[in-house]
Length: 498
Image 1 (tube, rainbow, N blue to C red):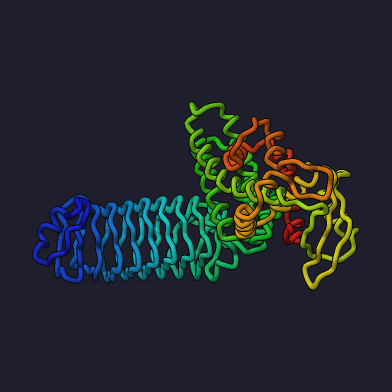
Image 2: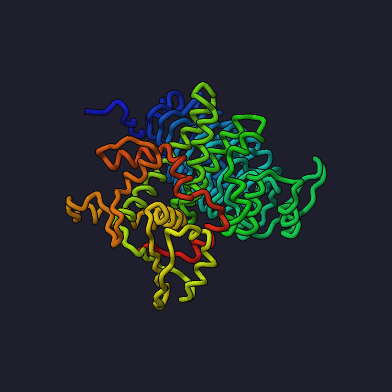
């Protein structure tokens, strides 16, 4: 029996029907010599084959359609809106995309050469491994989009091109970009901009070319940028080391943004973009989990500051908060596993000498109390093994929590796998006990409940989920409120928790 959602197979005897009612149809342009669409929209269709100037889209918008394996030569998509479409494995050459809008599309493995994409808005669209060669981008606004492993080469621009976008592993070659291309988007670095030049517009008729030295001076001056644009510029100049700097630390203070932005919707758009960027870096094992813990804590604080869902942006803030809760849950689960199987002393793999005083000095901020102390360092080929004795669970829990917060997604997943193996083999007798040589014998979940004030629950997984939703007090009690510069030092020394 045919499903009502099935596409109508292509038939070269049904051209009139395709032109007048392009709905849920397969359209093979290689077998259509000439066509002029009469419909207003092309909806839920599958388009493929060779498109030429003989195929007149006649302002018919592409909606919820699938375009793949297309070779387009001198095509004309002028005034054609493209919405909720997939475009993949296709080549567009000498094609006109002037005017109209692209909205919420997914474009993968495509090549645009000598095309006009002008006088257009492109919004909430993901581009993955797409190349733009000698494309005219005059008077275009690309907003809220993601570009992953894309190339822009010898393109024409007349403005900042991107706004509130994420550019990951992209290259911009022999193309003029504006300073706002850097400061209004996430992810672009100086090594990815080759040839061309960076300009700042003085007025409509004149612009100044900026050198790296100019950009460095602008970065240090308080007169140019707020915290987020300053972080973006710092990342452009300094790359990944920016995540261990004051620039990143200031960028994480979202409550400060909220106070400084006159338009609330601009704040929520920035919050979504920034959190999405950090999540992408975490998923790629570039960023540690700590910034996500900070963002989760701060969005929780902001949601409480808003008071209730009567605030029009409350749902957006809570949406970001709950998205981050998934990562926090993984972190807490790994932390609880480490505490459930803790030894006394705790062992760490570290990079550095075998001199205890070195670690006491470099990591002094981790050993401020008397409940934890370094007892010895054993030399290995690399890294070495550091032993830390402890007398109170609170002290060692904070130490392990901070060390774990400097780890990336892969390392937390590795602990999670160990947790799964351990949970399948450990006896029920020792299920809720910490393994230790000390006289302390407590459940980590009970310890967390004490900090949070939760009542006792039977299901540990459910308790972790509760903690991940509202870990504000836990965040502070575990000592996770720590500067990004110090995290960089911890990450460079402590490589693994054994």
